[in-house]
Figure (tube, rainbow, N blue to C red):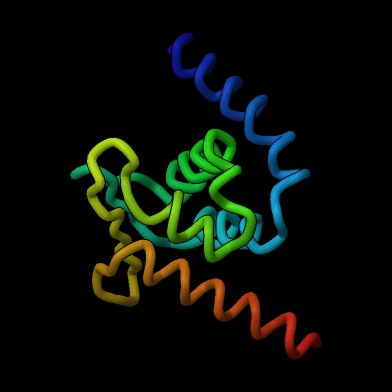
Length: 119
């Protein structure tokens, strides 16, 4: 239990300052992951939306030089394992399993449309 607490404190400490400097479109994508009702599959294991968002935030923190915007983030960081090269997948309650790449690009399209047509 102590190890889990340490890991959570580490994640919060590392990821919170990053969110402040993270491009808005990448913040939006990670927030969409976090608040989704989806299950994320990474290297054969299932993860909750919150766990996936934390993982993507850590990946961004470690590789932000490869992610200047949402497109770069999706293509270079958020779509597959940097260790195995296996594509991440996502299964939401109202849809079939798809690649995280496709899901994130759909979210990015929504974000970009909201910029074009503000409320």
